[in-house]
Length: 425
Image 1 (spheres, rainbow, N blue to C red):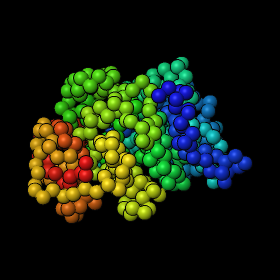
Image 2: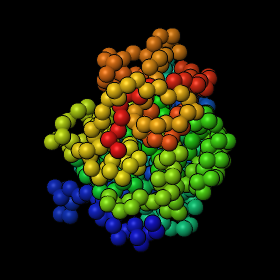
Image 3: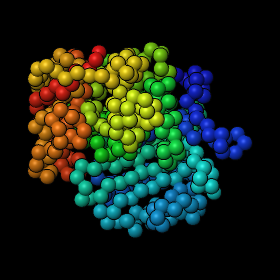
Image 4: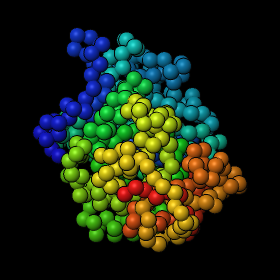
């Protein structure tokens, strides 16, 4: 989808709050955004890498940044010239057990009551050294018109690769993503509406950092998979071979593979055919997906009548599966229903799945704490910390990745998955 095709339909993905000013303010939009999920944000090496990425971003687009939050004064909103430098923040938060959070953006900053869908954003959040398998997130946002300009597009993609080389992420997603204010609290209902209308819009969520050991949430126009993460589906050489056979574009960058789904990012209006390349990539990466993610909207179970208000657990799950079958995102009421298997169905690593559904590793173990993964009810996914995967008939069952405290790959294990529920398609 080129710039002209994109702009013809993107207005339907823009949400304006007319309570702000004579013409209102855009509170939800679509812009180019890259989200990097990585380990070891508590270390000096990765903190320096973060600083390198930020410095480069400011060199390229810093003239548009007008304000940010001061992490040293209780997250107070300030003009950019009054903020401490990121170097100062990193120096003062040098303890590995210190969290470092940073958010700077364009737009107005005088009225803290008004929230804008910022066009320029650089933000990150790091973990503490004592935390177990907690990830880190860094994302940057740029206006979509910069992306659709050939000269600046090349500049953006070079910067994207620079960040991959610096951060060495577990995975990364880039494309036309939902552009929200710093807090999406006021646009949760709009995010659901936007996602229902456009399957191709990726939605960033910081909860991903807590779920990194379990896999990815989805893919985007550009998706980076690290060598270690690719071990879940047989390793980087097998991934490259599969991508090559599917005629999908990819390149090797340092510690992983960067896959491009199509010539340009696709919005994919609901009701239109899914691009074949997106379906192929979804098929290849599905065994990497977290099968029990939770909620993108800080809600658990809203009920059918309230589900349009926010991404609760069932709606989040369906969004993650939106490319798995044509009915999933078009017929929510039907595909939300699943059924328990009448028989115990086991599926070993590297074997072909015969039943589309959700599978669980019953004997999942916390190797860092040296105890079984906790769960409450055997027939419920709620508060179950064991590993789940989503597979369609014909998929190959993945390996299990045994990780250390800070996400380092310790062992790739062949295991037996158990069918938890069958899908209604």
